[in-house]
Image 1: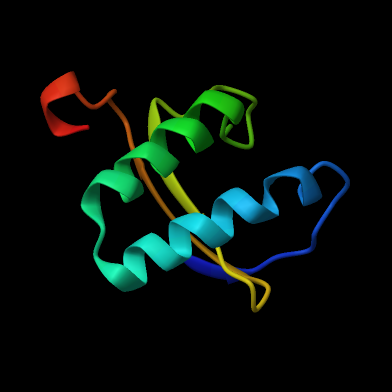
Image 2: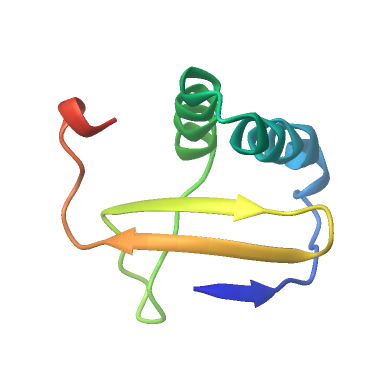
Length: 81
C-alpha cells in the first residue's frame, strides 16, 4: 500500500533512519536494509482501526512525503528476517 503522509510530532527523530533505509534500498544493500528494518520495528508499532496490533509489517517513509507499507497477519520467523 502506498499513501501520502502527514508528518506528526515524533516522526522527525526517525527521518534519518528512513532516509538510510531508502538509500540502502537504492543501493540494494540487503544487510543495511535488514538492519534498518530491525531498528524501525524495534521503535514502532502498527495498529488496526480497532486498536489491535498488526503482527508484522514493513514501513518505508520517503523524503517526498509518501509512504509504503506491507503487513502480515502472522509474525515473520527469524529465518525470514
